[in-house]
Amino acid sequence: NNLFQQNAMTRLAIEYNDVSILENMHSAVGHSLLFGEKKREGCDIFEGWMLDEKIRARNIMTQSILCTDMSNHFVHADELDSLIDQVRKLANDIAEDDTDSEIGRNEPQPILSIL
Image: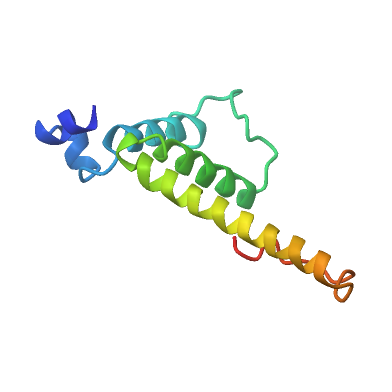
C-alpha cells in the first residue's frame, strides 16, 4: 500500500514524492499504454479523436484514478456532502420562491450556479 511504499522509501515513493504513490503509478502505466511509448499498433481506442478530446479524456482518467486513494476519501466525501447540502438549499429556496409569488416564474433558475 502507499504507506508501506512511503515508509520503505521505495523507488515509486521517491518518483511520486510520497503522494498517492500507487495511484500515480497506475495512472502513468495506463497512460503509457494508451498514449505513450508502450502504445501498441491497432490498440488505439482513441483513434480519430481530436487532441483536445484526448487531453480531456486523459485528465478525467487521471482524476478518477487518483480519487481511489483512500487517504483522501473523507475529504472527497465531505466535499460531496457540502455540495449536496448547497443543492438542497438552493432547490428549497427556489421551491419557496415559486409558492410565494408568480413573479419570476419564467426566469431561469440558477440551480447549477453553485457548481
